[in-house]
Length: 164
Image (tube, rainbow, N blue to C red):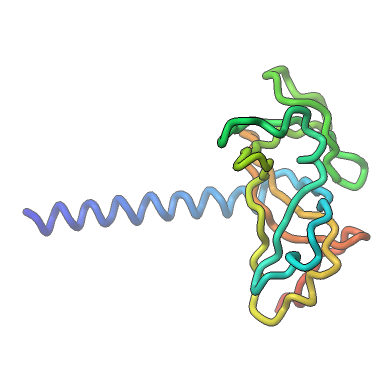
């Protein structure tokens, strides 16, 4: 009996993990592409080991972003320009989105607005390929959830080592 319960619990756990992976893979493949301009960070802390610290310009444009509380979540609406770069439009008030508008979920942690992640991890030894990063490429779900897919340069070129 114990073995059966453990086996069923293990299978349910594996199913839940695989469902989460499939959902994220689907979002990466079919989510709406949104480019967010990177905000300047301290150049000494830009490259730290095998990841790059990230901040996004749009986060600085959110009114009231410096909240006194430790944790706050919300959504903003950005309008995509002709290149797919998101520009802050307004906080989400629940109204319907117009064409070219995307809802994006954010979190405030320790007074800092974060979108999906504040770091981009890369393979050891490939840091130089990402030094020219100027945009983060996200895939947005209709819920506003974001996944960071790539980093892009000033001309919106995809950065990183060549794909084999």
